[in-house]
Length: 95
Image (cartoon, rainbow, N blue to C red):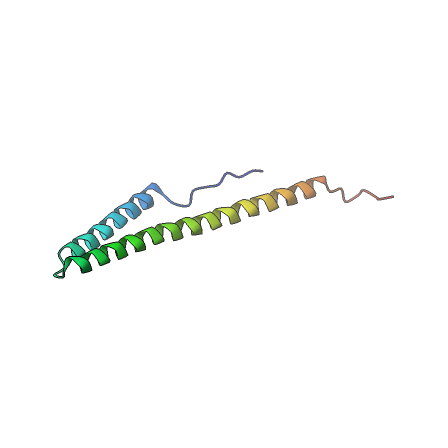
C-alpha cells in the first residue's frame, strides 16, 4: 500500500539545468568583466549578481521544502485514512 516517492525529474533535466545555470552565470560574469565602466560599477554589478544567485537558490530551496512538506503531510493523512478504513467494520453494532 505504501508507494515510494518517485523523482519527478530525469537525469537529462538535471544536467540541462546545471549546464544552463553555468552558462548563464558565465555570460553575466563575462558581460560584467568587459563592460566599459569603472571598477566600482563593475564591483556593484558583481555583488548584485551574486545576491540574485544566492536569493534564487534560497527561493528554490524554500519552494522545494514546502512541496516536500506538503507531500509528506498528504502521505500521513492518507495513511491515517487507510488505517481508519481498514479498522472500520460496517456491520458492527455499538451497544
